[in-house]
Image (cartoon, rainbow, N blue to C red; front, top):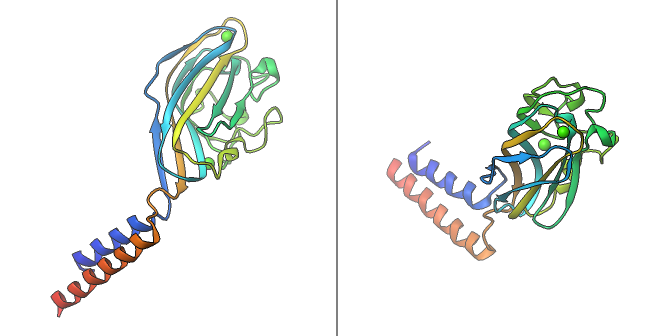
Length: 206
Ligand SMILES: [Ca+2]
Ligand SMILES: [Ca+2]
C-alpha cells in the first residue's frame, strides 16, 4: 500500500470515528477514606467527547485500605445517573464474610470479566465483575447509551469500625462512538478529498 493510500485510509477512519476506547485518570487524588464515615469522599474526572457509551470499566490503580470489605462505592455520570457498584459488608455487600482483605491494586471493575470480585484474592489485581444480589446486575452497563462528556463522580464511604485507607489513583476506561462524526456536508467534502488523494496515488504509481 502506498503512503498516500495509508494516509487516505487514516483520514477516512478518523472521519467515521467507528468507535474509540479512551482511559481518563482522576487528578484530584489522593483522598483519605475516613473510618466509619457515611459522609465519605468524592473524587471526579472529566469524561471524553464520546456521545454514545457502549461500555465503561472502573479502574482502581491504587486504593489502599486495610479492609476493602468496609467500602461502599458508587459512581455518578455527567447526566446524573447514580449507580451503587459495591456495598460494604455491613450492608450485606459482595465482600461480606471475607474478613478484612487489603487494597485494590490494579483492580478493574468490568461487567464482562468472567471472574466475580467475590472469588478474587486481595489486593484484587486484575479484572472482575461485581455482580451481586446487593446491587443491580451488570451495574456498569447502566451507563451505556449515555454521553461520556462531563464530570464523573466517584463516591466512596467506609461503613465499619477500625480499618481505614486512602484512595490514591483511579480512572475510567470509556468505550463509545460519536466523538468526531462530522456533519453530512463535511463528509461529502472529505469524500472528495479522499478521491483526490487516491487519484493522485494512482498517477504517481503509473
Ligand atoms: Ca466492560
Ligand atoms: Ca473502617
